[in-house]
Length: 191
Length: 254
Image (spheres, rainbow over the protein chains, first blue to last red):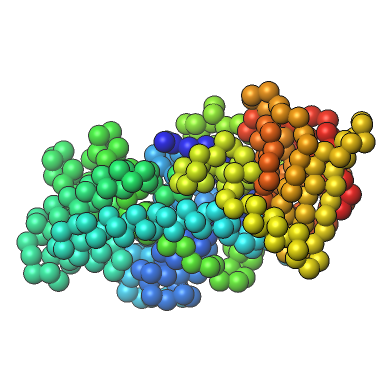
């Protein structure tokens, strides 16, 4: 069920390409919390997570064309970017550190909608259910890679398992989750 | 890298857990393999769903981003447009292309708020209820409306027809900016049309959301409008408009 909601996000990105700061602010209002939340979860450090969040939205401003709505939702795109950036920061292990438009400020700092929050919570519920359904070793490998920012080779070392096994477990686990989430009607986040 | 080798790595890649030569070779393979790209897109959605835990953003973070936005020059070429696979289905008209390349703050304020309003309804439509693109299907409007009418500082706005002086709709607005359509006597519209609620600030209409073709109670927020003088309702094509296109059907002073 690709929805009109994706279209709305895509429309926002179009406006960003036309230099609409308010459109960027609206993207931030919708997705800033998710980007920051994921960065913080990987980096365990709010200040670093703020840096990543800034970078992700500046990148969206400078290269809006990198988002391709045909390939997924804007939320997923931004989260993938945030995750990649956060993981880079973890791996380099150097966990480092007025003209603003009134309207944009107002838009960006306006409250996160209750409706979106409800939706996000519903997705989170489905995800923890889907993760819970996985065989223990698949779940563990996925969590180590995703939330601790480990490569699958590092995960293999940590779990003392062959690299090939871990690679397949991650893939199988992800596919299984995809099936469970699809059954539950979750098609990507913020769809 | 063979297709099978690449395909094996996709799960790890979607988690950013591939590095070194493998990473480079996999990216090369992805360039040429639509099947792997499609699977990767799916796996990335799974990864995003896992990482989707929303936290309140730190105060002031937006201002830091806004300050770092590079200034654009008038004569600068805009960056390439994003591809819009689903553009044809958007019910919103793009902001009119003007001659200036300055940021179009006002136009897009209205546009984005209209977009946001519609997407609220749609989020619910997928997850919780079948929402017919109406703000009025937001959950539990009724007890909330009752509470709002008892809340201290609430303001009741009566929207009268501009032609017949009959009362068309009643709206209650709380000091927090939360508002509700309490009741409406608006006639049902044809399929393909929707009522849309606007806050008028100076001469600027700010969309507060779509009310559907036969409005019942509905919740909205005044977040996009700080000091509106009027609330007005127009009839618009389904999906709403960025800027009112129909005549004002009902209006009231705030």
